[in-house]
Length: 365
Image: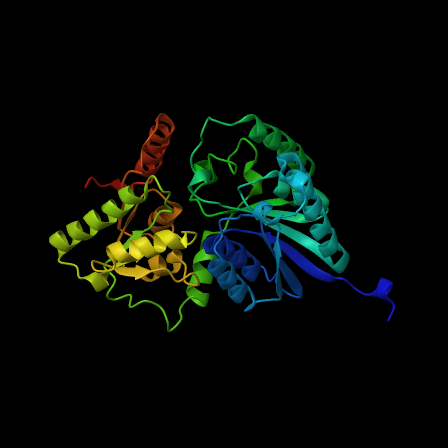
């Protein structure tokens, strides 16, 4: 066989960190019939994605097309050389490894799309530059897309400068899959400082339709029993006790006011939560509510399937925004995030303004 004449397989580079980003992407590709004969390279940049979540993403993607995982994590680059402990050498070796892996993909396939969540890093920008002839799609990363934080360090300023230049060159090949009711709601990276209105594609109906078609499994929770969903936050050592105590207080308050049983209150741990905290939450909460941490069953699916008056509650998150604006749930509430500094106080104020504008009520316990 003449390898030079061998036709390369069409492919997609998919850079994500959550199941919801996958749903947002696939709902668009499914509706537009863009999966046909395309292989997906699932690129893992973040070191905070649990192995169980990655396996769930792979399993789901395989229902639609071929998939291959490519790990490009900085903490996975190791060497026994003494000089390698220097930060500069680690960084050089990391980007050299990235170049090698992306070059190998380009030799084996013809990349037509680069799809990435909005947390743009130098590694993401480099992947895009190496595939500059492709079409580019951006996905929401989370609540950070809905608030504008004035504090931008020098490194981010440089990154934004080069990314802006890239956008100006490739402006006809960029699309943002919008899940906000209006592109005006985006204040972070996806906001109008970088992107013009023509870049946004309202993907809400595709998103809802895709969930309806692909997640009505026989293994779903007993939706009729679910009276409340508590949305978990990814915790840190300094705030674990705060959130654990809040979940306990919320459960007791719901039980007292509505006489809800343990089976009627479902706690969804954050999909990227560390195992040590999952175990601590289980030990603290399992006697007062039902604990859910199935990585292959995203919370958005369950919010969509619950009744109109089901109570959805948690600290500020996009899951609460989707519950209110996309799935039109009546009883959506939030409580304050953990505050331990002037910066976290300012961020909390931004969340308050955002949720007030979306008519999501704040609770005080």
